[in-house]
Image 1: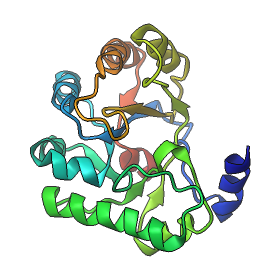
Image 2: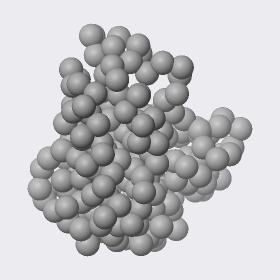
Image 3: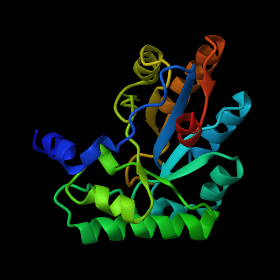
Image 4: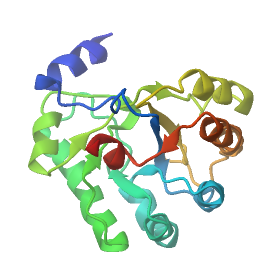
Length: 216
């Protein structure tokens, strides 16, 4: 597809992160599109197992649910930038992309006190000029090793995807929101994560934030 070819050309130098080191039994859970009304339930689940995660948040939802956004930061999870309005970057000018990312940066910092250092493009779509915008804002582009397709599959299938993708250095992409929706139903994501975490821990894997994973 056009966007796939464009994405490979639009981010020169291989500066995108897709996984962590293969030498360590460590994983990173990441959650996109939030915060949402369901995020607190996810935070409780992660706290139950003492697991840290990375949340790629949209500025619009941070403004909508500031207390929940702050709760993510206060629980010592990492917060990344997922654009302001969850707009696709395809065919956008550098100016528009900058406005999207910078607005999310300012919102996240103003409400949570966190200066995001990571960015994940909505839908995973890359476009010409986006790598320059992220460099300008001091952001590292983060994709994923395995995506859970949790906005479309049931919990059983999402859990199977996570289990099959469990390997050293894996970055998992899941969602605590559903794009621009308010009050999204993420019950399948919660159930899949509830099953997966203890299994991975029993196998000797450690859960880390993306930045922790990359530091090694």
